[in-house]
Image 1 (tube, one colour):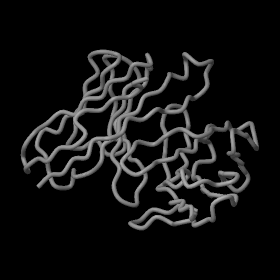
Image 2: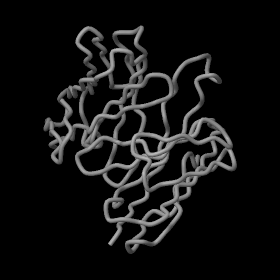
Image 3: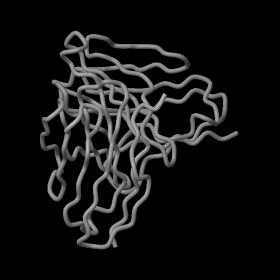
Image 4: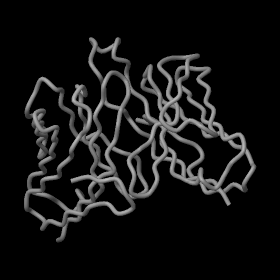
Amino acid sequence: NAGVTQTPKFRVLKTGQSMTLLCAQDMNHEYMYWYRQDPGMGLRLIHYSVGEGTTAKGEVPDGYNVSRLKKQNFLLGLESAAPSQTSVYFCASSYSIASRQGKNQPQHFGDGTRLSIL
Amino acid sequence: GESVGLHLPTLSVQEGDNSIINCAYSNSASDYFIWYKQESGKGPQFIIDIRSNMDKRQGQRVTVLLNKTVKHLSLQIAATQPGDSAVYFCAETEFNKFYFGSGTKLNVKP
């Protein structure tokens, strides 16, 4: 079972470079999320999507953009990387509340992308 | 318990003992709670969840207790094993937004 797959697993960028992180899920989940995880801190939500073609800002959206052109994929873009964006990035997905009798569902996570900005 | 900062609180237990990990949540309107386990180099893994209309829920070797009066959540692991060594953190949610604690590191001594 693939679940949530993130690519790449590791990346080193120079300040000012751009890149896209890819997240793919095979569970037919409606919701998808991008988080960053920094040492000693909880996961912080960057952007999320409640369905194909929709995106919304989370807690720390500045410097990032996202797209959800297909239900199974959620892309996170860094337009001009900065050292403050050095972090581990996690993608997650879940069923929608509407599709599960109005009840929240747990998020399923990928194994992360470790990104260093020099 | 959990805290925001550079250093995670650590709980050290002997193999075979029971472990209790605590979490204080902030939003009294949160109606769904989850415990996750995160091993080094891996993504968070779902352990157990509980809804706000319940006080206790049991899984295999794990129990979650919810005290809404004091906004407190705990995870109990029975007969802790070396494979349980990881960072554990709770998540609270209202509607479709999740908020995560920073975690507690569980260290199981053989």
